[in-house]
Length: 114
Length: 115
Image 1 (tube, rainbow over the protein chains, first blue to last red):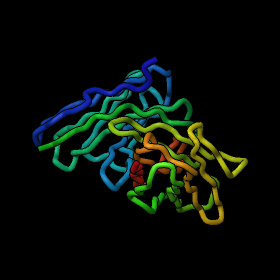
Image 2: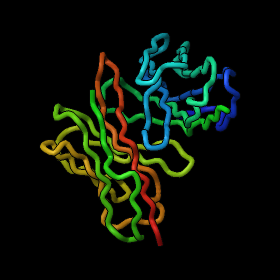
Image 3: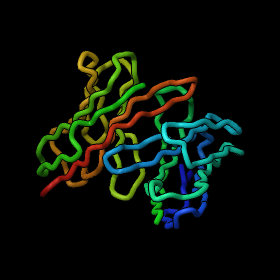
Image 4: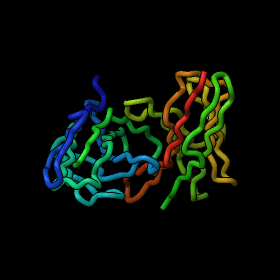
């Protein structure tokens, strides 16, 4: 049971480039989400999904796209990278939609945009 | 919408000293409260949570947090810290909006343990 996995661990992009951050979970969780972590700002929700085929925006969705074609995978796409997207990105999953459940986090992807 | 305030961005303490990390949230309606811990170069892990019942909740590694509804606080405490407790700690509140759980995080408190 690998839990939540993310690739790559590190990435450097030039302004304007695009890329996809991968996230997968093997716990059969319905709910998955993407956060970005910036110093002094905690974690902020980018996008989330409540099941395959269903996604919605979080607090800071601009510049990012997501899709959920399977229960296991939830990739995050940067369409045209900007320096403001330099951050650490975390994917998380949880078993149910109710508010009491623990979210399981991946190890993170550290992205630098120059 | 909920907001979470962690009053200290950094807390340095000596090993075996007590520590309190403070957390306040904005709403007095029923909420679920969490503390997550992030060890260096790792993702976040759940430390403890308050859902209902006893206002004092404990973790397996000696931390405890007390839910105080009147003060809308959920402070984290440990009576004697170890070097291994060095990490960043995040307080979070769960909001149920349109059927989806959303966690609102505080800014984080970096706990540094000095020998």
